[in-house]
Structure formats: C-alpha cells, structure tokens
Image (cartoon, rainbow, N blue to C red):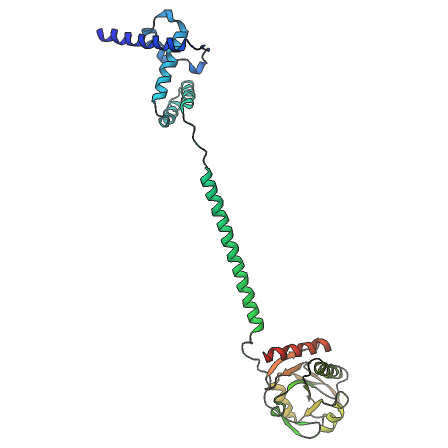
Length: 320
C-alpha cells in the first residue's frame, strides 16, 4: 500500500512540474490526434484528481508522450508505427505516426553533391573513351583502305602469254619483241563494218594524247581474229588508215586461236554467206607493261580522254 501511495505522489509531483513549465506559454486546444488514447484515460483519472479538468489531462499526456518520444530512437519508430497500423487501430497508429514524424531527424536526399559530381565525371570519362575509340577505329579503316588502294595488287590475272605471229610487213613477231615498251593490244578484223574502226581510232588518239601529256610512247597493236581473210597484205593496208605506228599482226588459224586463248578473247564467225561474213568478238583493249605482263583492260565504255588518263594512271602506279 505504501508503494502505491509513493508512486502516486511521484506522479503528482511530475504533473506539478509540467504544469509550472507550461503555464509560461499559451496552451492551444489540442487536435484529436494529440489527445491521449482511450486506454490511458483510466490511468490518468486514477492518478490525477478531477479538479485538474480535461486541459490538465491533455497537458499531462503531452508531457508524458513528449518525454517518451525524445527517449525513443527515431530509427525504431517506423517499425512500431507500421506494426500498429497492421494491428487494425487506424486512428491510434495515425496519431502515433504523426508524433513520431515530428521527432525524426532530417536526413539528406538520396543523391549527394559528391555522388552527383562522381556521376558526371564518370559519364564524361566514358564519353571521352568511346569517342577516342571510335576515332581510332575510323582511322584504322581509312588507313587500311588507303593501303589497299595504293599497295600492289595481290596476284595477277592470267591474261597474256607467248605468241608467234606475222606483222603487216611480213616479219615474225613474238611477245619478246615488245619487251621494254608499254603496249595497247586490240583484237578485231579488217572487214568489221563499224566497231573495230571506232575502237582503233580511239586507241591511236589516246596513244597520241599520252605522248603529248607525258612523253611516253605506247605501242598500238592490232591482232586479227579473222585469219582466213586477213592476210599480211590486207592487214598492212588496213592499219595504214589509222596510224603510222600501228602494228598489225595475223597468222594461221591455230596461231590466232592460241593467242586469243592466252588473252581470254572470244571470237566466232556469224551469218556466213559465201565469203562475206562477220566475226563476233570481245571488244577489249589490253594494257601490257614493259615486261609484257597484263596491267589492265579497258572496255568500249571508255572514250579517248578516259582511256588516256587511265593508261597514264597505271603507268604512274607501276613506276612507284
């Protein structure tokens, strides 16, 4: 009994101290959430006399919960409030949560200035790195492509080979007689109505233009693919009509077949009527180097200027 009385006296002394402290400030009417829960009213009514009134009870409750809130660790308040919310006491958990929120310390945001600066520095570093790698990759591709364009070709086409023919002045001519000279070779026949004369005119005009631009002499050569009609005399009369340095070559059917096979030239008789017929053949000019090795071929789509410029370009690259 003495213990109960002593405990009540201590409570009364604590209430008196709180009353003296709060008398200095105006006491607003507490909101519903700040009033004591219903379960604390019997305890307060058993300890505090009725003369104090409802306002005294509110002051006592505020002092009691204020001291308890200050003594509780803010980190442990969130689980308690969440647990009370799950127990079904909605209003009581809401009120305690509001009181706990007032006691929490203000924390910094999720991103600090240091982490923000580190993020910017990392992003700038990655951009710089990938930009450098991209430029390096582009430079490697460019240098590789230039090396392919400027470097020597891998292997040579299997075009050209030995031959033994007769020139338009009756002399035997082989590929060795043309060594040390740049040569442009065209295959055709003297009875060709239009294509062969046009191509030979283009060839000799390009030869003259190359001589004028660079001083290099190109040997123009005409090889007949119609050995039956293109005799030495016929070829001689024919080449004189185009250029004084144009060499005309003919031979036996086997010799012509052999040289045509070596240079990958197609030819075939068409529409034979007595002795008047045409020969279907490849329309190609072959540029041969001073060693009589194949360098490049030029088709019908080239005009005089493009043919001359193409030959000059190949000669310059060959000298490198």
